[in-house]
Image 1 (cartoon, rainbow, N blue to C red):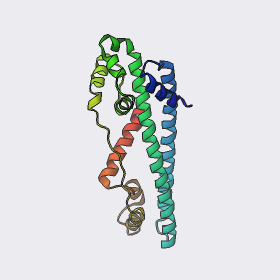
Image 2 (cartoon, one colour):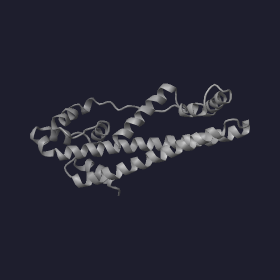
Image 3 (cartoon, one colour):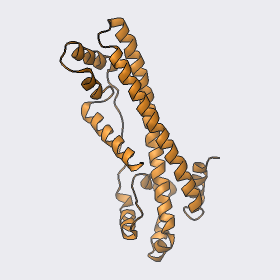
Image 4 (cartoon, rainbow, N blue to C red):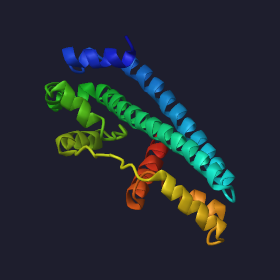
Length: 213
């Protein structure tokens, strides 16, 4: 059984009481390693996608269609890895927040908040603590954030699938007609979502990267 499953198992039996700081710190390190690995894999796939796109500039239609299939395959893999990244990020937030709560166990018991947290349904506790960031530097700020935990709304990051091949052909056409430079097109190439949604995902990814440096 993985440490993550052990942590969840202990939460199901007796929230917080049986969890140790050592277990949580170990799981935090493990999840941080997974996050770093997935980020590197996504960046590598992105480089491959850009390389394939540049290979299609000026190529014949058949070559472009084959390259489009390769790019779509890479995009699918990137989306799957991004989903994994989101899952690991929520797990990391949950464990990191639990660690902060455990470190303030004595203080939280003194103000009566420990019982409140311990009596939250395990599923709800995981849901809420996965979606907030506790820095743990100031006890008062930690308490304030915990008091708002039930007000936190879980964002929905659903992604819409668009016509990848059409977008790629349009992009190649822009470069071949001289309207845009290849590097500019590749940098702004959005294949799987409307522009506004893609920008939202990009901002989210940048924020998550910053939090886990």
